[in-house]
Length: 319
Ligand SMILES: Nc1nc2c(ncn2[C@@H]2O[C@H](COP(=O)(O)OP(=O)(O)OP(=O)(O)O)[C@@H](O)[C@H]2O)c(=O)[nH]1
Picture 1 (tube, rainbow, N blue to C red):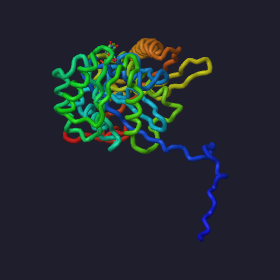
Picture 2 (picture 1 turned 120 degrees about the vertical axis):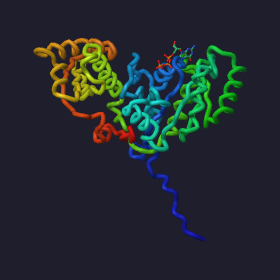
Picture 3 (picture 1 turned 135 degrees about the horizontal axis):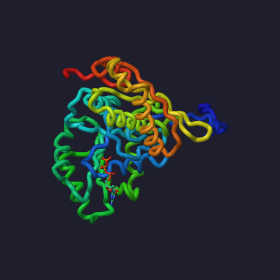
Picture 4 (picture 1 turned 60 degrees about the vertical axis):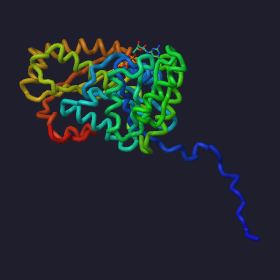
């Protein structure tokens, strides 16, 4: 007879000290033809708290559209403008980052308007999907508008053109099936720390959105005088005691002469830009905003590999 130790039934079960489920994190590239319902799905995936990217942003560098949480997994949903034919070096870097940055954990979700089915745009996307070695999800959207029998046929047709790991049928608008998509994406994220700390999740999209708004105002005002490379970064988004936000941003230009243009005579140009931007940021964020703008010269940054590294991107070769 062997002396087996008694089970440790005095060990705390589910106590606060019990190890938590390890965190996971990754990127999901959401692709689809215009109007497929990407914005609606992102809002449904991330929930009210972080779905702040409410308006259409002319996305250039800022690709993060929302950050969804599923248990211990952080799912960063990125949009990939021109993903199949990125022209500019910066776009290519973003695309490389979107696809490659999160390694094997990257997932690709193709959203298709089930009413439209496979039109030219979807066909073009499907033709290219084979090049991407990532787990892929097919999401048929707007099922509230179509007959279920047609849905099955459509799912089969698309999977025959390109086999997807999983297929979902949802109504992003009504929320039907969205939880299942979130669960599936969460499971595809790789083990690792969250890229956005929990207390920053809610303002990460806001920071990006705010930077995009200022950039938009900058170009509205100075379209002919500024090169396209000028960028805006939100350095701080701080919620004040009265609920208002103190937002600090830096506008990066390539040369001292451009810095002067942005500032304007006696600072009047930057004041005007700041005023327009502040109003729009406040409207988008639905809080009172105090905006502080700084202008800095950063030479040749768009061609400087170091900048790409700082942004966590890979410097694209040959362009
Ligand atoms: N009936 C129905 N309408 C939907 C559903 N999802 C989205 N829509 C509608 O489809 C239209 C386009 O949705 P968006 O979310 O703006 O689509 P999108 O163009 O892919 O998103 P962006 O590229 O970010 O603009 C809107 O009028 C939505 O309300 C759905 O599940 N059912």
